[in-house]
Image 1 (cartoon, helix red, strand yellow):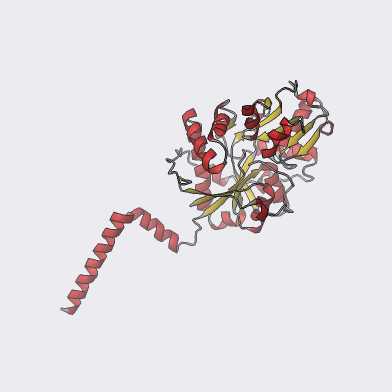
Image 2: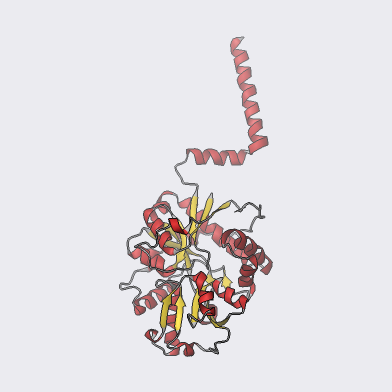
Length: 309
Length: 53
């Protein structure tokens, strides 16, 4: 019933959402809002997770406070990312102008090596690319987003409006599945570890040990509860996006969010079925990404650079 | 007489079909399949994602 399609960049995903070849996706919250503003007929119906973003510095850099990053080069995954808004929020908190930082966009998978080679001083990214540097011993956690911006939203589930109109039941089933599996993940560390095994092997194409590290060190590094889109959270994102110039016009929450599916979730937990060893877990078939060469380098609807789910 | 034979064949065929559905498919999955076949509702959805949180 549900297939997942792995992308290597947001630009292609945005293009597919716009053309209608893709009807649902996990994308960064500000990018989703931006696409809606540009006329792509999508709405945010649910969140992918809470928190799960980390600000990393070099292991031997001597940087122990955000204030020390003034004038430094910091990598973010996209110009339309919540990671950028987090940095802007921290700047306000520490009395630093955002323009005092040298913010650069870079693909998340390359960030650990760019930090290691000294090409940047820090990077803010969604997991597991922070944990990669931490596990390798080349990076050190300066801040987990959960400790400075609790209930941080990174990725959201967007669905095309034509799908919502024609087949609302399948959208409800998807939302119920995400919400129910989130409840199961939060039930125990064992559940998190077994899900990490499957996610690493079939979905992330990463060593399961890395995903397991993310899921338990600390255990609230990424959270999968309280995923209904809340107006107050998105109003804060909108405020920061307007302040930083990411958006030029305010949008009402109801314009880009549809909460009927999250409101209809009945609270049923959905345990992960056993791994069948074929890349088909719980009826979800994994479709590998197309070779990079066959993908367009950029799409008009999305900002350049990498991104996070 | 001919009608009885034909009716008998039809009844046996129906019973064999029902037994096949019961044993090899299950009535509930069969009904869901039929509903998907004749419904205009979409039952397949691909969800895009990037392998990063």
